[in-house]
Image (cartoon, rainbow, N blue to C red; front, side):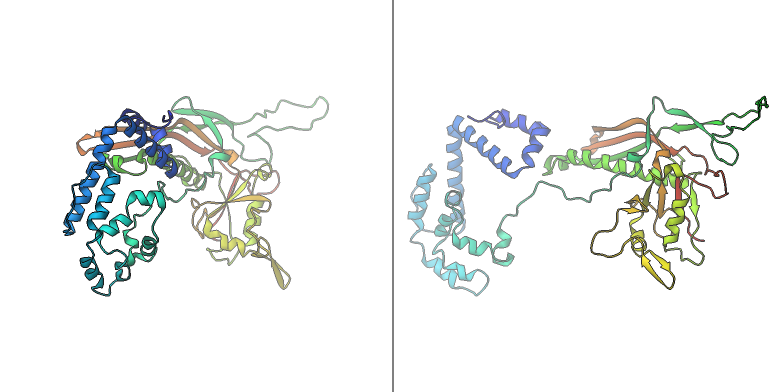
Length: 454
């Protein structure tokens, strides 16, 4: 008996094909696909012997028609319903029909002529390539000689294998969300209290001071913090596509499974892009356009499309001291040649500072902090080609997780199915400006980038 995991009746087969999980599991494994449907065929014929006899009769009739169309005129006895008897009938009926085949084999010098004499007649050829014999005994050597050559000698006639898989370019992993502070949103807007802290020259936390006073000294000076609100407003990020129902039905790979896999990846990609480059108008505010962004000027005389060691050292120095242990470098891939060539001048000579040789892979850090390459950074020579960022100061508000809906009714007149993907999210840095340190005027921030010029 067939196991419950395999269909044994037409109803079982229909149930399997209507179950996306079971269907996709079987379709993804060629060996499992063959074993399942072979088992189904055996059980089906066991339950309905007449269907098997009808199939054999149909096959015999089709063979007869093939021979008639190839003008083989030898006298044939009546076809038998049994495949085994039918094979013997064919062999006896056409074994003597050799003259015409030899004449054909002698004509021309084209591709395949060397193999023509292998079969005195079409009947002999058909017997040799009989499917049932191939299944039992393997492919005859004469067929291997023809099939294993190039396309012109028969390779084009060999059915190609079809792999039930889809080749596609993988998207890079999200840069911001895994490192940011994610806040669930209970409504369309969430307001988060924050300290407005822009300078430590005379106070901290936007005005808090501590003073040294003498005994019985005046303590009445107001020294209170300054508060503000960070507002996150849910923005809608959507994806939309449609496909003809014929494509859905005829595709060798489940189209719905492909769409359900590709679109969430695409949504995550464009979300991450907005967290880096967003303008804040109807979309998240990205670090590139943040008020707290600190731009480090390039060296005097340095070309715009170059990065030197002095640049990254100065960028590191502009990071908030409390953030240096969390910050990461985020770099466009076309910046890599500049990083690999960075050197430090020492007297009349110099030495490489990031890559000392090309034997091993490039270092995974700069000044001890991880390097993340992302195509979402701006191109070399543009502001935003390299960042040094502590994403702990970036807020992401999640109002609605990604939802998928499909409908066959929207494009009913076109016989198409529509898919819609929707997510509501916002993001922005909660720092409103760079910080003036206790001593000095060079500002610090959690978001540092390299300027385009000196």
